[in-house]
Length: 479
Image (cartoon, rainbow, N blue to C red):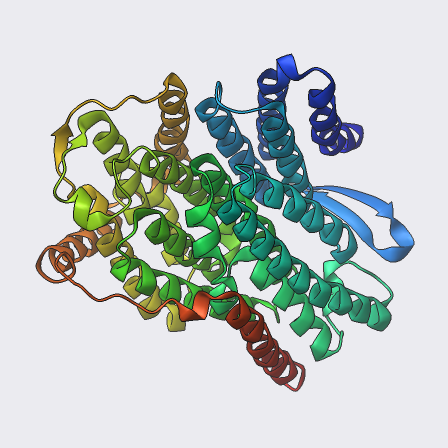
């Protein structure tokens, strides 16, 4: 299994470069890598004990693959496969190569348990993501890509300094080095991860980047890329109990912030991007079950972005006056039902499982975030169906079958959720959310300011969050 793991990590990078040599097989090679990742994830679920690989033992450079990794890796495999279906006849070898390199670097991040190998994985994923964002080569896409790259690189510089401080304190780069490390080490490392993961105000670079990218790239970014920054925080919270409250607190804050913006947003892709921020908060709010929630969110958000890319407009006000082609509307409603927590879809089980693992002080805030989710996706659910048939590629429907089928099949993960009490509460939340949308928010003309999303403000927010993190870690060390 150790040899298989090393080969599985290296293979996407090898195939990514091979695609340039034999571009006529680009999509087939890329799809093979996605299938290989899905197979590896299933092996992790079948294996009882976690696999640990000590690459450089004296420095604590360690890879760990277990069921938590399996959820994230399976998400990566399914989302990548769906995006490849969607783009089957429309992209160049360069796009497929960068997609697979991105896939491999994110996979590597999902098995890292040390700060230095994680740094390498995150940096490679950042470069590959930049190249995909800038793929159209328009002035706008290049600017959005450079903005993403600059914010990401600044955050990773903070992270690297923190990793060095943690090593200096404990002579290891392992995640466990945060125990006993100086407060500034934790603050710097977590600042980098918060930015990379799109968490709280540090993640307000995300809405512009995800909404202005091409539809398949938006699906990749929201479905898997941001989770490369979220996964290490989940892993740290599970390894170090003193980190758990900090991760949960940022989870609650992120869930509320993202859903607040999503409720008032009038642009479809921006609403989905803000809701990505919110749903990442749900993953962090209950780290022990974050893997299953990450899988559900990755599938549903990728489906929503791919579907939104086939709507006749991005403006909700305009869409309310147009009839959506019925097949597209059905796909949109199924995905919206799942993320709202409707039974028979895995979003229901994920929300129930997360709720059962919340601490008492989190419950009210996360229920408010769940209500905001129902209000946000009522915007899609209550769009009028029955419009003229749109020309959609066969790849779009293959992607939908894979993603929406995954949402239905993933119900088996937590079938115990189907009790009367567990069913009534989400349905009541969804019902209240729909009523609030129909009578209050449907005609709302409130437009939230976007100044805080501007590039220079994002750099300033990093400083403020760094101070907050330092104060929180200092308070923890004094307990």
